[in-house]
Length: 149
Image (tube, rainbow, N blue to C red):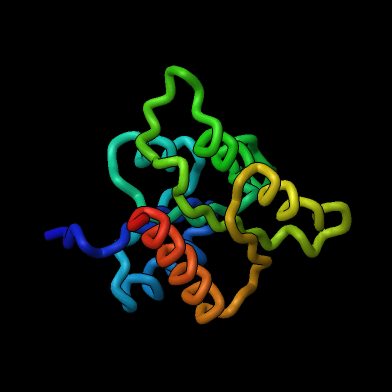
């Protein structure tokens, strides 16, 4: 049974091992977690379920090559839904962008772009789980404080 008082975190990451580790870590501290591998799947979840926070990888790969269905497009679609969008995400949905590709030459600008598109926080992989937990707590508290006003 789903506890309606557990914050629901949606994770979009094409690395199943990384997604699983995040899911286990976040469930242990009381979050409800859904993990998907593509931006389109995340948008589908956002069109039918209430989500309290989105964690998205920047790059999504298929057969080792980057594809367009990644985090930058997802952030843009969440922050700027079109007139026919079915996304139920509120405009203040906290978004955390993560990427391990920023260590590669020419890729260091990706997290900056994610921030300019509307990510509230950006993290370079690998990161410490406590760092992510603190950021999630801060973003959810900030959102709740805004909703209480």
